[in-house]
Amino acid sequence: MPDYQQALEQLVAGKIDEITIKPENFFAFRAVWTDFPQRNEIVGTAERGGTITYRFNVSGKH
Image 1: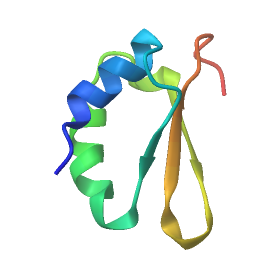
Image 2: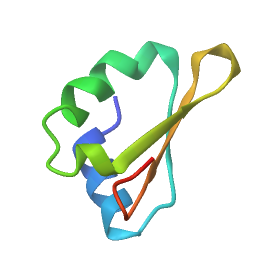
Image 3: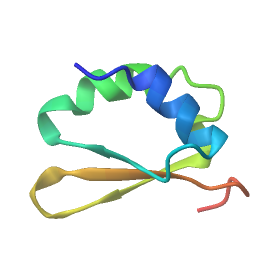
Image 4: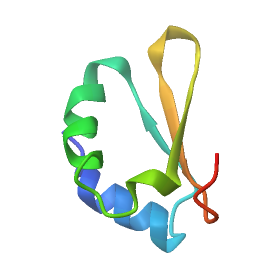
């Protein structure tokens, strides 16, 4: 399983542009995301088939 904590930190630091989560990994990702300090600035966009792409929104506004 991917290290979602590290992925979120890289996303916020600008080292990666997005995180793509498949439906089968959503609950594992969510467990890390809900405790992440900048959670409100990480916005997900659902795609067909249940895949969600998360991006860092600097302003914190959707």
